[in-house]
Image (tube, rainbow, N blue to C red; front, side, top):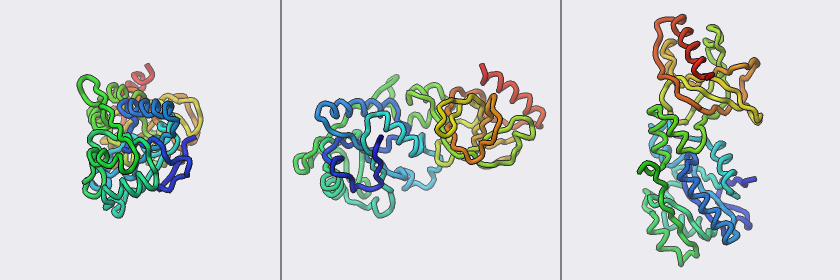
Length: 305
């Protein structure tokens, strides 16, 4: 099981490890390629693998307008990293004080003295330190002085495009779920706690679980075929979901509403993981409830097939 830290004060047996630094949002195919290479180093040099990431993501910290941005939450990220041979994860709180850390101090005080990294895996465009003053060249310049080796693998290209979290966000926003899932190498999913809503779905014969999407990227508003996992239960339940603003009911807040097939019971306050399987149609406003109910039945048939 992966060891979690919220500071750079790690155990002695986790020092002198392979360190990967980044957000790793979504843990897509590009990231997976990186971790496969890190595992080769792990086996060759008999070292442990550690990840340094930050919460909130620095980009979100500096730009308050980025409310819906993440491909995965911290819980999902930890689960995924656990599958890629990672031994420990340092999730440092990114705040005003830490953002002012000088790049030279980050190398000396953190990477060398605290973590004592032997290999540092970063992307070519990696920036760090106060006002993003540090870069890969600075890391390489200090290799001998602080006894580590920088590894910067080439990015993964698919269809002549670099696989990145930014690309996947754009695909989801456009409704290209098929390509987004291909680049993630799994179904994109949202996790959250079921909240009590206005119970409109129940009143019209289609009860739903309401989940606040919080900081997740807003995929194209519309109707999706989904499968749902409850807490630690292994079995998935199939269903249909509406992601968006519910224009027929003049809803302003973004909400994920999930209707499960062949299920009856109370899911309030339960933690659900919702996998997005297929984009069915975009969200639209209906003239009345009856028109909406007719469309929901059509959507259900598509989702079930």
